[in-house]
Image (cartoon, rainbow, N blue to C red):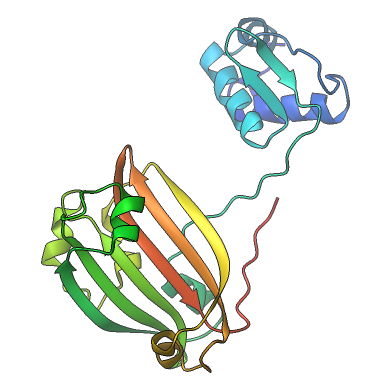
Length: 233
């Protein structure tokens, strides 16, 4: 097959998916190696490698060094979640975005924060708290810690007119992150900020973002009662 349609990784990915779904490659079967597929498709081996990695990311292929690539017997459904700019979330809902800085300090964080971010317990971090508004109503409370050693430019930003959420996504690279979703009970302070009854159930996202082995930021975002999140698998 030397057709031009197989000269980019997306077209190879499409053909690999077709073979899996058509059971030409059955669950558990060892598929041809990259070199043989490159010859068959008439493309570079790197093109095949990129396509197989993309399919493996969906859970449909199981790739192991020296053992080859097999079709997954029980593929795991995976959801993709992007780190959103909260401004965009609100504007996509057709609402007017608003933002208010609550506090910005450089201080030694609680032990729980320094432990998660893997920084010395006496190392000061930049602490930024703010509320995001939708049509002048509190939408989300952002409680964030930033390591100024990793993001020194953050020390020069007041965060009075732009949220740390938006600023970091524009100015700071990251390689991966860890996210925890939970239902939490609103404290007196959180209830006051979000204008909801104390002990209300809040949708809470705790996230640590990393650049290699260094933690860039840890943030807790709390959404008011009734908030939903939707993704695809």
